Image 1 (cartoon, rainbow, N blue to C red):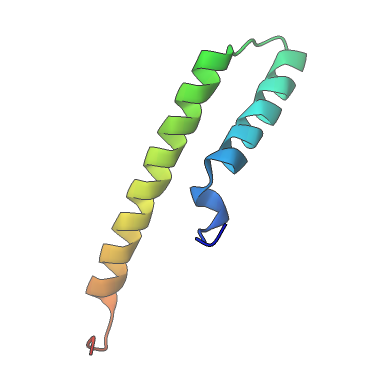
Image 2 (image 1 turned 90 degrees about the vertical axis):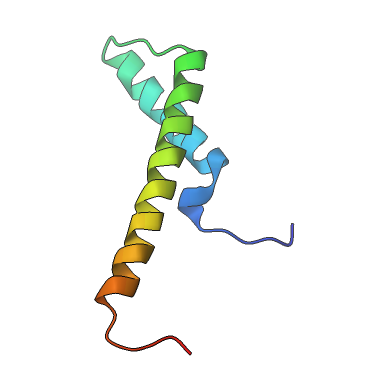
Length: 68
């Protein structure tokens, strides 16, 4: 792999986090099927991407120096 990305942009990381969360939820008596886990991962990826875009826009608007 040559391309780099931040950890929070990785579907693998979010999938693993959701699997761990589902395991803990299962121990607490809550069941989350595989389809729902996948949908949650997609929703989180969308939210993180949107938050990143908003942060970039805010950063540029709040900046005090010009871009060369």
